[in-house]
Length: 302
Image (cartoon, rainbow, N blue to C red; front, side, top):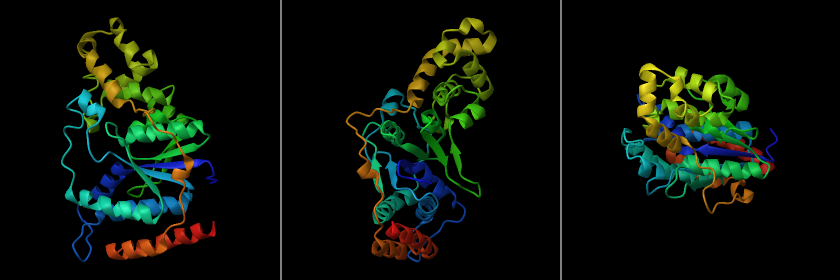
């Protein structure tokens, strides 16, 4: 890959959670009983990206550390069903931040009131306008709505599966939409149990795809209920407000105020090898240290 105008944006928390739960039946501990499950898997994934893709521009994006998002203010049940974050994940974050610093990789917290999705969306659109090709590395299907000719979703390899890079054609084929932006309307009709977004009761994937292909958007569906009949008509007419609310919750913000993309803030500098050795030895990452050295050798030759 020629990465001169390629930007990799990593959606941090879904990958950290996945890293933790991948070991839920056999957690990894250091000799001092620190649970390193979320740290080791996330770091392994990160080093693989660095070694395989050799990006020049990258950032890891976290949700804000304080405050609540505008979505929670709009809908109090948003993400309300989620269980408490495991203590091991809270403990892991400072170590992950240290590792990012040693690798000289930029990381950002989304501004208060927004989520990492919104900040990633804003960065991606700004960078696209400046001629970059953007790869959003995530396990979150909500990012499909951002896909354009220059913005791709990169699903990293997990559990033996190969990586996937999804563009416009892949999304059109998978979901029967005319353009990835219609993913917003598709999820708005179906709802999203992972975020506790209600959608339109009784609408599953098959009906949602059928309505998208016929009407193109949830608004046009809601204005065309005279075409429907039976229980599905009653459900949709009764829950129009829920459908519109769901669309607002699902739509990723791409224009957070007071943000400008400055490429120098995303450039990956030469790693600090002494610091890498120190933190990896503390965490007892012997095998990962060898993989990290591969990347370090490449970087110092740039």
